[in-house]
Image 1 (tube, rainbow, N blue to C red):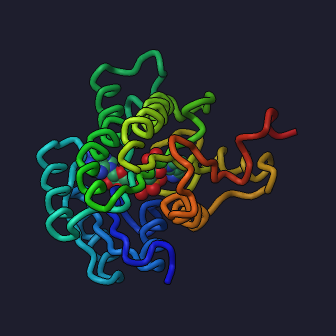
Image 2: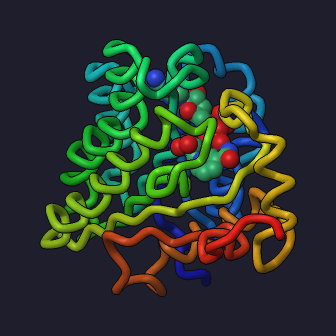
Length: 259
Ligand SMILES: NC(=O)c1ccc[n+]([C@@H]2O[C@H](COP(=O)([O-])OP(=O)(O)OC[C@H]3O[C@@H](n4cnc5c(N)ncnc54)[C@H](O)[C@@H]3O)[C@@H](O)[C@H]2O)c1
């Protein structure tokens, strides 16, 4: 029996088969985890098709900007699963005009939307997950981030600001929820070709640069993130919390670009 066999997980952020959330979902499913997936309304068809390949997951609509949606989602998970062991946050958004434009010209509304969807949502989810995880004697929370939170990555712009807030939330949530035996961590993934990544400027240049500069001289794949996620969410990582683990073929250790 695997370390995650029989655990329950709630995953936010599957949009299609390229989604990082889908790679994590598949890995958790293979480990024998009972799954609940949420979808943003416009993604329903895609998500239901993917969910049909799993063993009867719970599939729920949830816009993370809606407190009512979040309340309903966690209530349903509580009813169906009687508790929750794993929460996966793979959600991010910034309005295109604010993401593509200059940082000094970001609108107040764009900033608030980006921070709401991409950072506040983790705090909103964690608070609702707490009682469900307490019912299980603890739990593990995972969110996805990117290096653009701590270094300037031209084109990442407003999303870098949002990811900085997300990473700080990870650390404060780890401290806040630690007494309940709930761990909170992040994975800082290298660039991947997903729906969201299309909105980031210079994404093709980023792939080329990673191939030239990363110590492993290649780009990552979604499954690399799924593997590390399964580890971080498992008891093997029971002493790791408040941390950000890089899954980027070592790119973040480099001090110089292509030479
Ligand atoms: N793709 C990359 O290069 C990369 C690298 C590092 C980190 N990440 C992060 O990984 C996570 C997953 O992104 P992805 O690359 O798999 O792209 P994706 O487009 O597949 O996933 C993003 C998800 O966010 C959801 N979402 C956006 N606004 C929402 C809302 N209001 N309510 C509910 N859901 C909403 C979308 O429906 C989608 O499922 C994001 O946090 C992203 O920033 C991505």
